[in-house]
Image 1 (cartoon, rainbow, N blue to C red):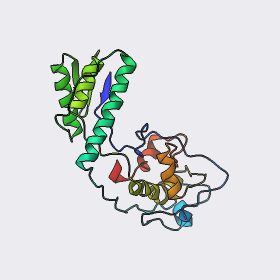
Image 2 (cartoon, rainbow, N blue to C red):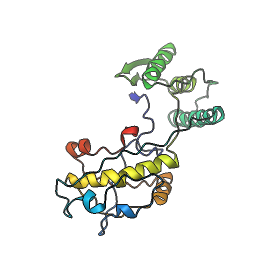
Image 3 (cartoon, helix red, strand yellow):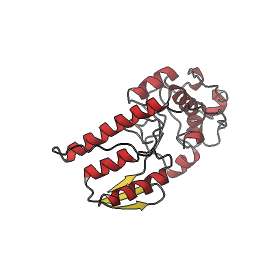
Image 4 (cartoon, rainbow, N blue to C red):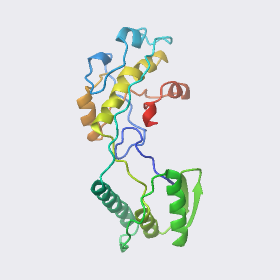
Length: 237
């Protein structure tokens, strides 16, 4: 079993997503990017220039996306403690799915780990001390061989990776602005124009909170398109 160190703030920060989200819905009307409200100053060029030719031929102009991301406010000590409690409860519920009669150990947080590489090394050390066969893999992952779920739980509680929390409304507005100002024009320039409704920023945020995120991603994306048009702004990659 390979356990990722943790993918933090991936994609839209939804509970179940790490960047792999449903493709955008399709409709008969083209997107109207400049009609969408945004809490972030848009850097989009006029639609006719940004979107290029109506049939999405290559060579259309793609505007630069230079907006600065919103400043993230760190969690307070109380918020961090509550976040760790919730995560521990969720982790224990997974243990009970495997071992319904398991007794929850009195594991307490000893150190919050800030770095993913350090987290993987700390987990492996903790698991080995508990008699579990564990190895680091790459820089920020580790593998477990037939590990006791209770021991795995205890190590995750004793040495948790710092959780920066889900996306804030300001961060989601920033991503929405990136989709409209840069990503949709970029797909058009690559010959994969988005055809569909573009939600207003408030609706976009509400849909993400309801775990029904809208994205303008193509149904199938080649490596070339993915490289030319990153699905997230540079600040969140």
